[in-house]
Image 1 (cartoon, helix red, strand yellow):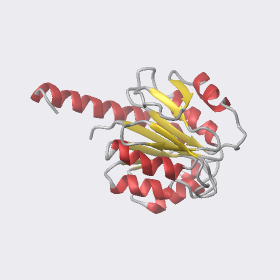
Image 2 (cartoon, rainbow, N blue to C red):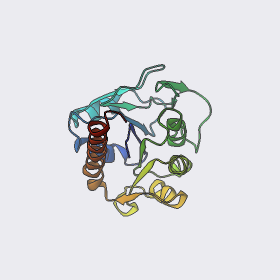
Image 3 (cartoon, rainbow, N blue to C red):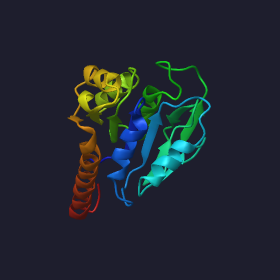
Image 4 (cartoon, rainbow, N blue to C red):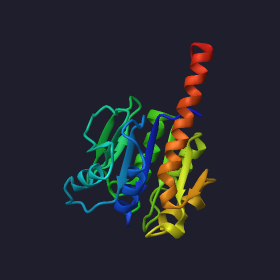
Length: 203
């Protein structure tokens, strides 16, 4: 399977978990990574700065109408839902909270299907509510790939448990294994796609 984007949802304990995942990825990681981390509505852009300081990748807060670029890490702004349009750009929404959260993991995951169809890797990390369960189910129904942190390794296990209960996830891994596995999964995907292109001169 060829992948085109990674979407990640996290909540309580998420900054540590996100740092673990992103720090395992090299500067030439080929896909965009788009993150919803539940934050206080009045938070500033500190999360992007923290994650960038721990990662070789460039990390920024997503902007309205911004076109998604490969190799970038995007963070949903505090108090806005982050949506992906079918032209692979972002839009921001101040519609009401979903699962008591804005930004909502479900909103990001469900709209990612518009832009990336079945070429999505979705990751659910630690969190204390059920946000993300509906989103992973829809991504899986559309042919995407689901990775969930083991509830035992999560600071808060409600989000991982909800995702596992929602659908037949592809991998359930301890936190420290998620970053390396993601890198291997994407590298294998890119290699397979390159080999097919070389062999046939087309997709």
